[in-house]
Amino acid sequence: MELLEREASARSVVYTFPHLTIQEFVAAFTQFLTVDPGNIVKFLTEAHSKTDGRFEVFLRFVAGLSSPQSARILEEFLGPFPNDTTCRVIDWVKEEVQRQITNAGSEAGKRSLLNTLHYLFESKNPALPQHILGSVETLSFSGLRMTPIGCAVLSHVISRCNTIKHLDLCSCGIQCEGLQRLGPALHKCQRLGLRDNDLGDSGVKLVSVALRNRHCQIQALWLDKVGLTDSGAEDLGSALSTSPSLTKLGLRGNDLGDLGVKLVSVALRNPDCKIQALWLDGVGLTDFGDEDLASALSINPSLTQLGLGGNNLGDSGVKLVSAALGKPDCKILAPGLDKVGLTDSGAEDLASALSTSPSLTVLDLTHNSLTDGCVPALCRLIRNHPSLEQIMLGANQFSADGRNQLQCLQGIRTGLNVAV
Image (cartoon, rainbow, N blue to C red):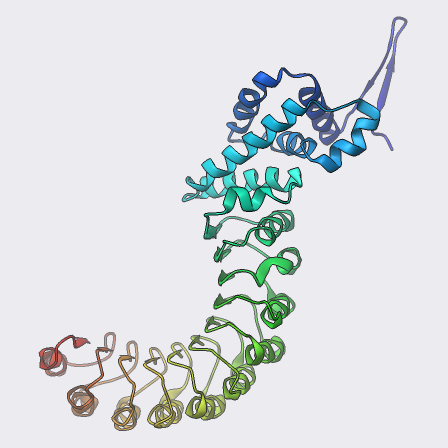
């Protein structure tokens, strides 16, 4: 297999390993079996301190040699492994993981922590993750490029640790293969961030499997900009209907279109659906698909926050949503209707419908085409709605006089904020 190269002379025959990985494996054996146990910690610390990663594979091999499974197989050929060295390597791994956790704020810190978790993975000691990470509730690797192997390492750690509640893997370049490695552990997290990864429909399907797990603990899930389309929305919608724990879901920036939103709306109609906050900003929803969503909003028993910004709803689409928001059974406190193509005509319909909304507290109408023509209707809404705490109207087309009329209402109720 060309793993060995033979070089013969009159005095000796020398075999060398041309492959770097083999060299590092043999070097790890040499240090593990012959080094003075008293110096092994200093040696490992010096090697780990190199920031260019030159010793990472070597260090993973050293950590792996502390594994009882590895020792049992290899001692047959190499003799007994020194117990003192094994204990010192395990102690070093413990201390290094704990030290890196406290320094994982920067990208370099996150990379160093992930490398250190590789040692934990290689040691194959099932009790170590819980022992070391027993007080850790959050692991954040956002912005750090994650390979499938890195995902396997995280899965190993999380599956053996019962305290990690928040896993942030946003913008990590994770694709379907990486998510497959993470799959067995995803259901254990309470807050899971996967935003800005190229998961596609197949990757989201794997997340849906975790949501269906009867032991699933996921309460908040961010799947914004992951390449989800209407083809994958049906499977996700089915999972939402039966998830025992999910209450917050972000789907911003996916190409769901009207059909995809319709499939999600089916889940919202299910009485077993527990979603309280749903963000559908910029998903390609139009007034044609808005009717299905509005129908679901009218009967959903739990939804209190809804983001629809950046969709081309227009006045007709907003009117449908407004009618649902005004129903006595609708519980939505904070509808987001920024950048939806709303004009004065639609704003008047909206203000009229919301006047009977029993729960409205926050209203976002920024970045629309509102002018002074709808100021009287908005003023009536602000004056007469007792629970309204904040209304955002910036980036519209009000004159200075119109802005003043709206802004003057800020003091009429304690805590009321009118942002124009």
